[in-house]
Image 1 (cartoon, one colour):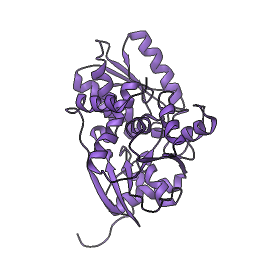
Image 2 (cartoon, one colour):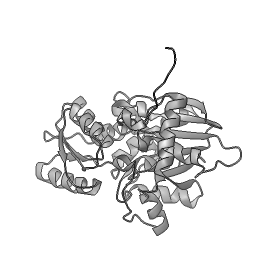
Image 3 (tube, rainbow, N blue to C red):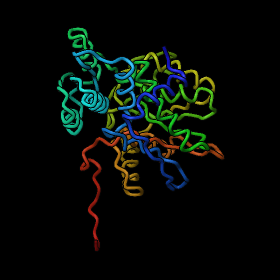
Image 4 (cartoon, helix red, strand yellow):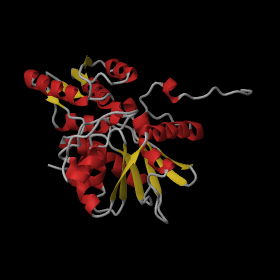
Length: 317
């Protein structure tokens, strides 16, 4: 069952006391853009919205919750479980950054590392949930998770009502799927941005269905799903058929440049996945049409600050 705008409104009410209403800011990057600073969400990404909604809509039993994650979803589930007084077990692949592993454990979850990529962690988490009876909170292919992520779009619509085009990074599709559900009839166009190394929505749109795609590159730990979710795909395909979902692919170099621009011009820290949407605009992989009012979602900040390779600042302090 795919979520509706009413489901997203219900999710917003359900999680209102659990998550932050993240700010927006205007920035001149050669043109004026509106940034939605979802990296300021608790745990450093948009993911708690879906995690809290799933766990409040279907309260887990004493076995708690199990999830698979590249890192951000795991931290969100762990934080939500701690807030609700539940045990959590998080399965992550070997590519998960050390900063994200530490973050998950810091929220009190049991961390299990194994497998080269997200799919291996997902399979292990599903087996563990079946064994223990814990609630499995899927990173993106679950109605309650999609509705929770869609609250980003609902909130942003109130904050920036004149924006016509929204750039959003895509991994397994929970975020873009929730946003597509909210914007099904609003007239807003979504630009679905993926790294060239993780093009699972691009591949699905070309094939007409979710299909396996390569996983690699700088943003693989947050955007490295093998294929998009079955629930989100009809939502994205519907908008694509209407000309209101535009796919874009960006290079790792463009992602790193976007990270640096966010830091240098706004003092915004973003992980590679969090800067991927902006990379499409800065690199020219997506060119705004005449008269467009552009919004860019900065969706995550869980990165080792040394990875930004920020040159030392000299001068008087």
